[in-house]
Image (cartoon, rainbow, N blue to C red; front, side):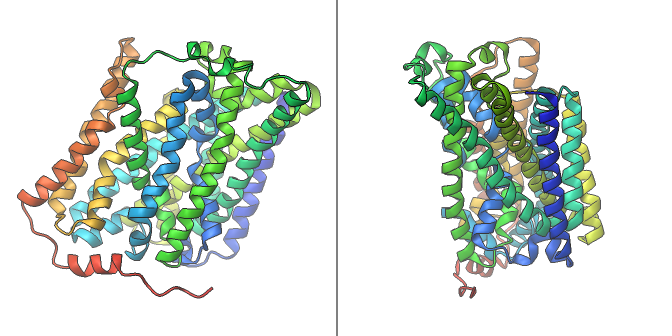
Amino acid sequence: MSAGVGYAALAAVTAATLLIGAYGLRISRTTSDFYVASRTVKPWWNASAIGGEYLSAASFLGIAGLVLVSGADALWFPIGYTAGYLMLLLFVAAPLRRSGAYTVPDFARARLESLPARRVTSLLVVAVGWLYIVPQLHGAALTVSLTTGLPGWVGSAAVVVIVCLSVLSGGMRSITFVQAFQYWLKLAALAVPVLFILFRLGAEGTSWTGNGAAFASGLDPVMADSVYRNVSLSIALLCGTLGLPHVLVRFYTNPDGVSARRTTLIVLGLLSVFYVFPTLYGILGRVYLPELAVEGNADATVLLLPAQIFDGALGDLLAACVTAGAFAAFLSTSSGLIVSLAGVISQELFRGSVSGFRAGTLLAGAVPLGLALLTNTQALAGSVGMVFAFTASTLCPLLLLGIWWRRLTAAGAVAGMLTGALLCGGAIVAGGVLSLSGAAVPVWLEQPAAWTVPAAFAVTVGASLRGPGAVPAGTARFLARLHTPERRVSR
């Protein structure tokens, strides 16, 4: 693909993002607009916006790269990403909306009646958000360097600048419109090129699986520990989805608990449709771009495949399409994370004002940009999977037990969150050190959720039952509000 086509694709997505964000600014006036869009976002809009922010670099580029490298084992990622929303539907969506909180730390304070619990939750939410933004910036660096020839840091910096401008303009109200648009853009950007490829191969009588070569087991890595790996990854993805701050804040924008559940059902459908397409790219990549696995550049499969199949203007056009979708993925996920982090930072440091929200936005974007410029990774889905493991080990016990277990105490919640953070964070750091030194990383460090998540739950329960402090006095009243269906809001 020529650099000019790459520039045009990136410019088009940027212009659309800023224009839609400017439209949101026209109707963003109050503090509630900035934090939760005044709780008036209807299910289809909210589901599209969730799809926009949830389908990140790991989904758009990373899934295809994993299928190229790992074959069927990679399918645990899209299954886990989607099934996590089933967990949200069953256990979290409606009660969290009924809590009346603006952020996850707000929920912790209201449920546990504890300022220390709120502060620990705030630190973890910010840490999770920053860790999640970094892979998006790495994906932007990869995309910009491949499609335009510019240095990778330009892509990372461009994402942060564009997202901060969108969030500063209109907060959650503005970002809702942007993310809903970007979900459908990403879906079309993946679907159109791969359908062109399949139609061409069909017209030529060519097998798109290379007569079964795409499924040859010889292409897959040999992993004797794959059972543990897959179980641990599933735990991370199922439980980690429950604690993602940019996902949870979306449920505060629904009018009521009924709408929150309906939103989650729609999201399940949208994600199921979306993940068909990166899987197809991965299978096609195993036939037409197998060298990317050897080169360690598997995450580029989606970007390079259209030009590999089509020559000339059509190949450039289809490559521009996936480039635009990839850039939209980085923008939408980063914007969701930054708007959720800005809310937390604003309430903790700037008293929750609109000006504080804007200051929090700048801080939320600057730190991960610095981390992205100092690090370099292209294993997008794997790095995001580690963030899910960390979230599952820290925020998931707070939310599940806070909603469903009356005897949870502040001391228990804090002990569990800190235990999960130390164990999972320690495993991530230790695995990174071993990897940099060239040593083999044990699977229990590479995929720690199978033991860190149960440990966090066990410490939370044990410290609540045996540790200092009593069950908060208002627990029964708070839980009654969480689990009592409200009257439906007329539409």
